[in-house]
Image (cartoon, rainbow, N blue to C red; front, side, top):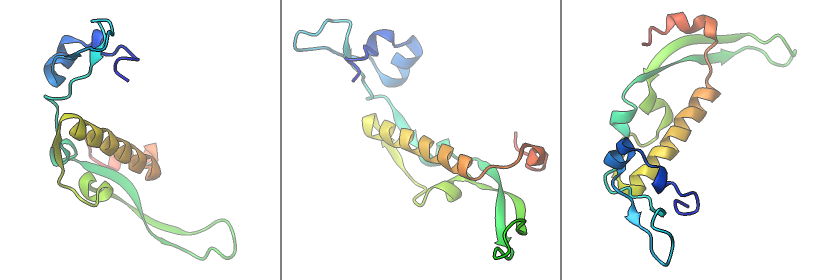
Length: 129
């Protein structure tokens, strides 16, 4: 994919220092294309997601047999995001394996946050930076 998209020719200096120089192309592919090098990449789930997340925690739902409106009991809580999103909190990886897990973890956190929204007018109670 990196050759098809010609990603390596567009790498910034910061990307090259974070990931490593691209591996050279082979098999007659032009020298501007190469393979993305993940050899310098390292990922630590606990370090990346060390903070808290603020959300509306539903504690109970009232009688739903009569239709709407339904009584809901909830509270605004701030808890460690590691505990809320991941069953296994300790993951460290490097190279493309670590990068793949970092991307999947980011997807899981985004999904969790979107599934547990907090209304904007209640954000002042979160005391998050």
